[in-house]
Image (cartoon, rainbow, N blue to C red; front, side, top):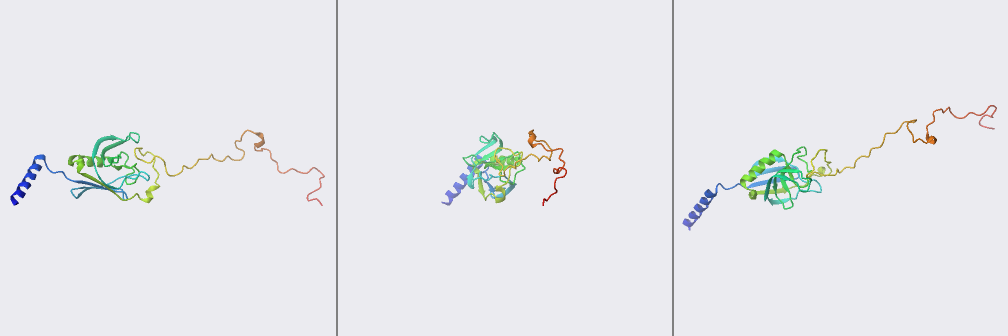
Length: 213
């Protein structure tokens, strides 16, 4: 039995040597509560980055997922062909970890469900997953959207691929400035402001004074 054990170990070692070095396991953990991503390789933390997960109503699904597809240059088929560089897909519904060109909102939940990264960080993660194998990559989504972020208004200039399209705040109506007395009027002389008002009318000469007896 001992001889068989040694022979089996040698066979496994020979197989690894023939196919190259064993691939590392990559664990991508995203905490929606803090909008942070942690990347671990074989249990050792490699990177920690800010992210943007789904906005209220477009929440990034929680759970443990196995990444299964990668696209270096992907464009959203649902949201105006917006660029999603270095996409790593982890759900069949289309959720992915990907780069996002507008980095001003990283750290806030403003996407339509995907996990956004700074483009440089996304490129580094993509290269490592490609090297180690997409099927060796696990994505874990935890936490909840902070309550303070639910009512956040999307700032002008945000790109449309996953950002909320409708501001949650009502638009303040704009009213015309009030016109001063004597200003423009409708053109009807009945409502024209008087320009020769001389005070209250005076009684004719010899008219009894007020109050009458």
